[in-house]
Image 1 (cartoon, rainbow, N blue to C red):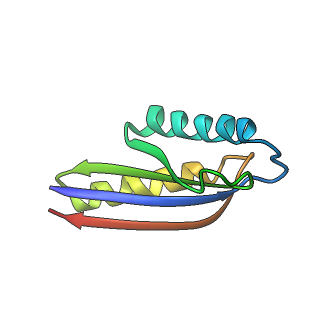
Image 2 (cartoon, rainbow, N blue to C red; image 1 turned 90 degrees about the vertical axis):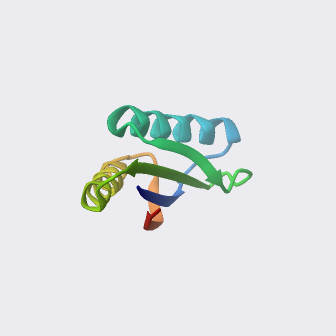
Amino acid sequence: MVVGIATIVFRLQGNTSLKGKRKIVKRIVSRLQNSFNCSVAEVGANDSLQRAEIGLAFVGNDRRFINSKLDKALNFVETVESAEIIETEMEIINV
């Protein structure tokens, strides 16, 4: 079994409320879930108005396939106009 995980940190320009942040994060999470059938959640920076941290995970049996899915998901997130990516971290684990 192969598990691929990624963490993405966003900067939310011009955001002034937690409600606005939730709206942006929820849109990103739902688009990732619908497009890639992966597990996605907000995993950090919960009280920050200008930052959001999202984690996503894929599980499969082929390392190349998981790596490809992670790359495609990260490229997809780069197209989001309401949030700027500050940092990404990716790891693939053989279990």
